[in-house]
Length: 312
Image 1 (cartoon, one colour):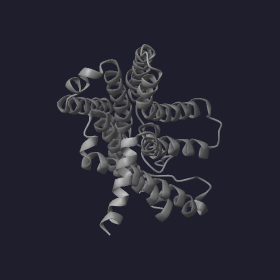
Image 2: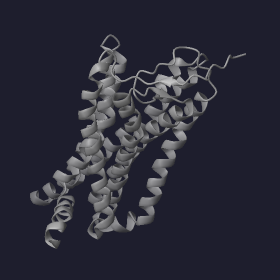
Image 3: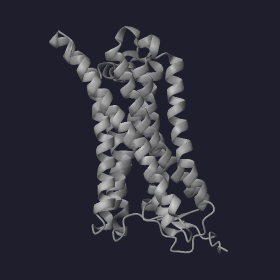
């Protein structure tokens, strides 16, 4: 019979050995957090407010921005709490909930990038039927499907966390809760919780990437069949922002995986820093990429910030 010792809260960890510098470390992190909130919040506002952006491509972009905001708002309170106030304690239920949202939103991000690839595939391969295929209802169903897939796939491992006894050290290795961190503290058979996430990563994130890659091969094949060089460049240009976001997301995924798999002897601060890059770099870069590469977004931003001046 298991001895349930789950009464003690978990302890979050900032940057071990650098506790005196936590306040200084928090400054760039706060700047990044604020930038992410402002950048993605601006995208959501523009897409909602500007009727010229009421198209499938921008609806999917809004889903990406909302996902990035969700990841940021899920991790930010505990990170700043640890760095500013040295508030390390976190209850089990809160910790499991945070882990659920973090991992779910990571799967959602992969799914949204796949949906955006489908959008570009239809726009270039079948432009005349684009609006009739990707109706508002279809876009909504895709969004619900992406969210449901992620939420249901993560649920089994999080549910099992509630039943485990925790009799090892209650110290987690990050300033937020991750499933792989929590199961190390469990005094139980965690075989399922070790193997299931690997299956999810291969069945979803890796499969999403392969489908995206294959879709771009077909897109490239279609573009190369366009006679006009100017039209070819125009068609490819509509995909550049999405390709950049794909690279930002999957390069950080590969980097984090590589560090965890082959960097066991690397300083712990390297693992922590890579985790922050994984969770902060894509949400920070995605609004920047679309603001630079998408003229409609640029125009919307210009109108948004010139509005007070025009009224004056």
